[in-house]
Image (tube, rainbow, N blue to C red; front, side):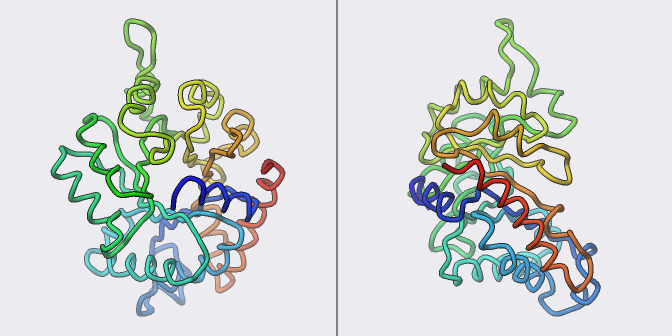
Length: 274
């Protein structure tokens, strides 16, 4: 999905919601835990319930890889289902990969190649190893790198906010330097919702770029604050909610509960869509 298609989708659905498919069998409703293809059945029900309220889905690959080959099969079933729906949606492989060039090439092929098993639109990437670990993900037309910039976890203070001798925090150097590796058509940035007050500084460096913002909902981030500092003329935001939507209920009404939570966020977002 290219940039204009994503912008059009946001305006059409009046939403910039991303639903995180961090599917943990232990947290699924009891009637699905032992079912054949239970993870996929759970994901399919969540997708059917939320797709009219969101523009993106973000499977966290760790939840599927932890289940071994069977988990990857559930992921493929999920991606095949998304591709079969005939409704446009932006897909994110939340993998946070980052390694030397030839390894990154294999990661990119595994998850972004249109002829591959998964065919995601984008992938989260760690920038620590620099340009040659990131640029292999930019070679597929219409696909995106989503670079970690400023995260919400407690450990973010260990490195991301440390300053150089000029007083520039490391995350700001990542933003500025990475603009040489890609552009607004193929590179986004992860900025945590609990760091919403820093979004103004982020926007000064990457004013036109899309930002993937996790942390709204269960992690305590404020949608109002994210929009106040992060919106641009094209919206420029994908705001993720995972647990607050997919685990809104652990009963047989889990899909209906997910739909209510997704619609609630979509209705709040609609007020910010021009």
